[in-house]
Image (cartoon, rainbow, N blue to C red):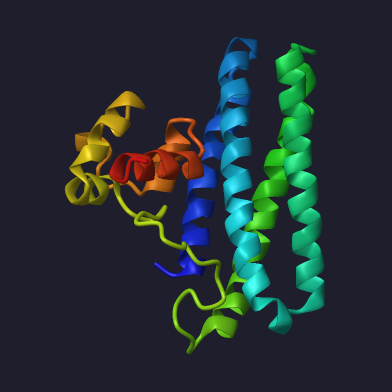
Length: 207
């Protein structure tokens, strides 16, 4: 999976979360807690996605249109900020779903528009820049890590059996979720992908 393909996969997962959030918003005030939890998870997923996207943009920066770079910077600043503000309102218990719905609807619309624009312009531009280079060239190195976020649960358990209790402790169902990549399964279970990786690394090579 190339760096750009991975970002496209992120978009697919994010759109699924947006669909869940939009459906919950249309079901009335009884879904307040569902909307709150989805917003919290979406914030974490979006932060991880932006981190990966900015790494790709940095690797291609010298050959990208400055206008595209400026648009990415604005979107990466504004949309997470809107979600953080909404999450603070949830934590404070300020207002019901009717009061939050307009702001959330705007965030959903903005995220969908931004992803469509990236897929139409940014991603193809990055692919052109990276064409003919070694996959991952210019991207941050994983250092001495033995795991990465693209590995599936099954592969990790197969290569490092000592990791199975970690997944079980996090209620990650290995038989059912075994073909899922680590970053996606972390998202599903409300865990930071980098924290899951570190925990697994610690089990593989205890200090």
